[in-house]
Image 1 (cartoon, rainbow, N blue to C red):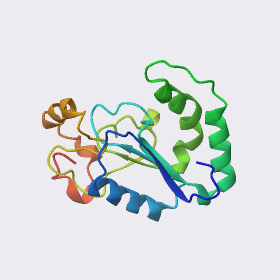
Image 2 (cartoon, helix red, strand yellow):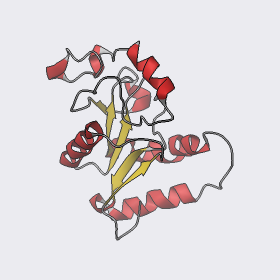
Image 3 (cartoon, helix red, strand yellow):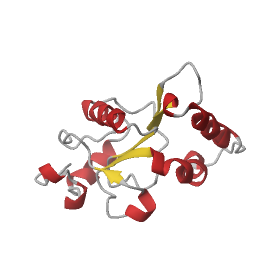
Length: 163
């Protein structure tokens, strides 16, 4: 973020697979002309910005991208659990939520605190979710027992139980 030699970038967890579903959301995001993308794809994705599922396009507004980078870098580092999530929620979220395409399959009823959300453009394959990886088997069990809320499904695909 804020690098003049980079147009699009993403923040990723090293233990997460890339998927076609994620690519489809990124392709859809590009059509929105929004500067940022935020991805939430499970009932356990209960924070505004997940450290490994967001990104941006510096060239939509490069000055703003540099300001957001400076805002994050202004916070002193700490070695506490989930500190990145706290910083993203406290510092970045208020500044980018209206400039982001937010894809969410479970939190659409929390509109006031989770921003203006969009349904995912493609259906989930089985119970695999964006952000899934080899160390995250525990989460598949949660998805199997939790169909996504009807309000979170695309208007033309309310039949997608696991959207």
